Length: 196
Image (tube, rainbow, N blue to C red; front, top):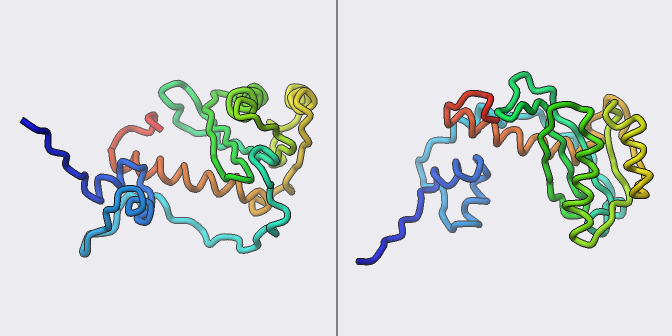
């Protein structure tokens, strides 16, 4: 008796991949969106956004290797704690590769410890060093604990202008991607919000 492999449908793959784009499903699995398939209701409800700020950073200002510049931002306070009690997400985006990394925390006071963890578990084992940490003007990026991490690892602190999320666009765009996918997945599954 032999096993038969069944290719999941486009719709199933789209949902399993966190409601990703049609292009990604096609590139990864070679499955195209069938004609006449209705648009994904969860994506329409959860992924709408404002028109983007069109100013692009010059190519010569972008990092030239992994870790050169890392954008850090905190999302929260999320009104419904996760199953583990987290109410904030700390996001890191490498400027060179645009690779995102996310950590879930219960309090903003944990941000300095999470930066230390990111450096020692992601950056240094890969043989890299962070030169610049770009952050917004949030209070979690001030104080003795944060300054101690910067000094210990010889990292320059770069602060985006106050009340200007466009100037911190790399980090802000990563939230748009991960949060909209999480919302669409939760909406489709019908699970309670604590499963974020």
